[in-house]
Image 1 (cartoon, rainbow, N blue to C red):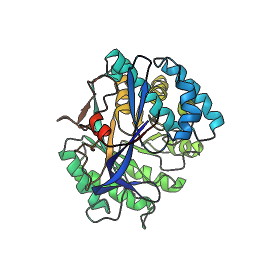
Image 2: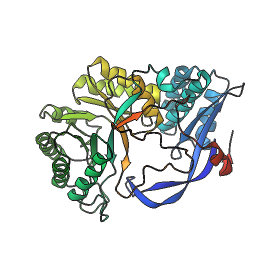
Image 3: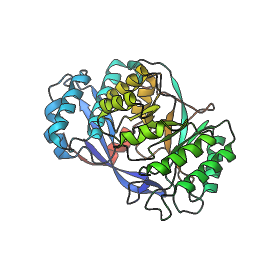
Length: 379
């Protein structure tokens, strides 16, 4: 594990929502490297502190050292079973970063992009622009008019779809279901009828507010709404889905990986399954959910961006969109961060993200920059 100095363009509020920093903020990046006894390697950029030294020492190294790194499913199953006794310390994201490094290793060793190893159903995927949460910054995302203006800019850049994240605490006037609807209406009026629109709103609305928003979005011809209520109440989502024509997507934050998603699909609580590579234990786990959704005749939308999400979308036919974000009027999303050589998910003239052509996951890591800015290394 290598830690290195870099920059981030985001800061997080007290509720964990990202907001833009126009000048950049000093940050510590982490690079996980897996090496076999012949020197072949796989890499994964680690976000947050989910792979602390204690987690590496107690769980990761004992289950990886001496294993064949091509036996990803065995290693993943061993880590999955170890979660039971870890009581939250062996987080889903820890599994994800380790498993992504194993996939990167496989791709590099076999000289193939990972998405081809997963099946290669397509070599590009349509992208939707996913906004940051609302704020109270003038010219940011502080009003329905701000959202409308930003949506017009995003469409002008080539996006064929936009997803709003509306206002949440600690913004003083949030949550407000009617304010959310006003923003959604302003965006629809601004971009016209042909742009696909979605909403991700306050995650803890009650049933009546969620029902009100869903019915209004249906009038505005929105494609879907996600996570308007606490997802641990699956019955609330079943109640909502039974009353509205608007498609409901989820769950996003519920634990349980593919097993919990099977319960949601079977119950009819959602119309579109949703899973994240980082939040569900890795690429293999997310792909299991995609195939689960396929067996129910459902789409499976991937939460969040990055090379892991692109790999899954290259292997799954029923994910319609890649989520580009989080975006904001004051955020430069077109310049790579210092430890990267390119923006991996830039859209083309048709609003699509081409899948990486490099061997492995295709993360454009600047290894020279990391070497020159290394803070510490552990093995």
